[in-house]
Amino acid sequence: MTVDAFVGLGSNLADPATQLARAVAELASLPATRLVAQSPFYASQPVGPQDQPDFVNGAVWLRTSLSPHALLDRLQAIEQAHGRVRLRRWGPRTLDLDLLLYGNQTLHDPRLTVPHRELPNRDFVLQPLLDLAPDLALPDGRTIAELRRRCPDNALRRLAPHSRGPESTG
Image (cartoon, rainbow, N blue to C red; front, top):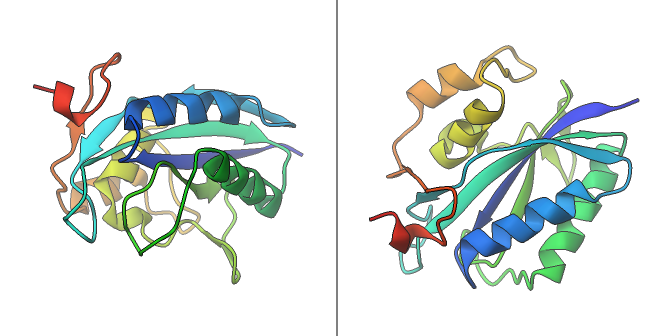
């Protein structure tokens, strides 16, 4: 059985746009998984500690037969390959991959919560999801478009397709 899964990508260290582009390529090569679409990249202010660079974010739409936990394991392996170190909550990172949605499933266990618990509060997640699937909805019926309209602004800026990061949005 294949499921549509949506993964959020973020980085604010070590050439963030390149980190995301490499991660998209790695996600596209996961076993039992096909990349359906990739969103544009966006720059935004950090959530949490403000003593760090702006983030570059995006999302991908995958069609996979991996289980949610197997997909999570693959996402974490990709993060580790990119040098991800968790020093503080919401701190700077080379790569952050979040499983946002997995089909129409709701999961909550010590390792994984789907839909991602912060999804309704993150314009840098909601906008890329809207770009990928304008009619997408959460398992509880709330649409991504509705959540985006109600979401706090985080100074979101769409990056040019070949942009290297927030500093080149001019």
